[in-house]
Image (cartoon, rainbow, N blue to C red; front, side, top):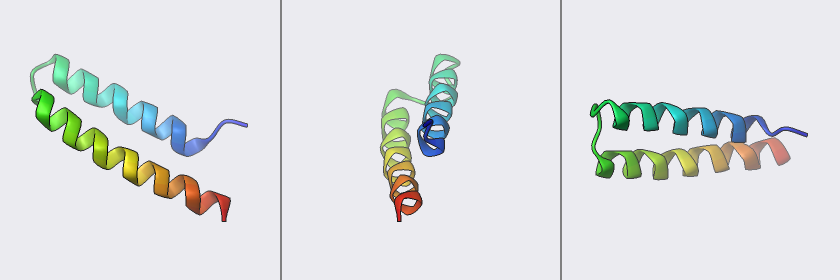
Length: 50
């Protein structure tokens, strides 16, 4: 079974990489946003399980 939260996280990661590649965000911003995304998508994953 494919997990929707995982797909959405990977999509967000792709977008972040594109933003970084185009110098629209810094490495530090990338890392901070990715950390928040990991928390958010993990929380969504747990909500689906309950």
